[in-house]
Length: 121
Image 1: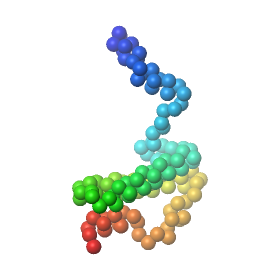
Image 2: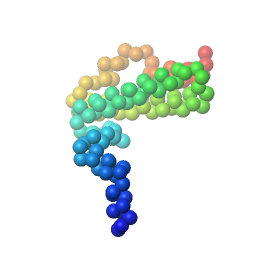
Image 3: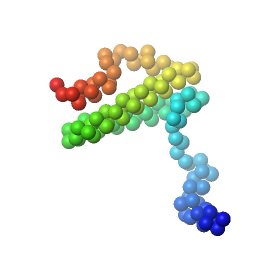
Image 4: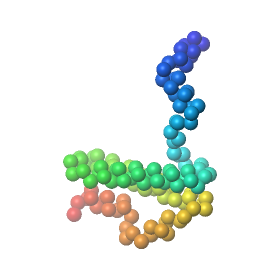
């Protein structure tokens, strides 16, 4: 009992509690898009994923990266692209825009391009 009381009094614990009370704790993206029931939040999570994809695409274009790091980044980007697709489906279900129709003009999906980078000319 005394140990738990000591833990509760640490500076970090007090800071974390104050953040929780003020509502400043960063909200985590739901693991499943279907768990989200609000259109604005779904749009927010989609934008966050797009931002993560952009950062990783910028990293993968670094010529100094080794093959294994490039493959890891490629896998992460493809995973994020799949996740973005799940969020776009959820956004449509919640009455938002159909992003699949809006962006269907592209010739090939981005993951095909990234694989071509790895395989060479």
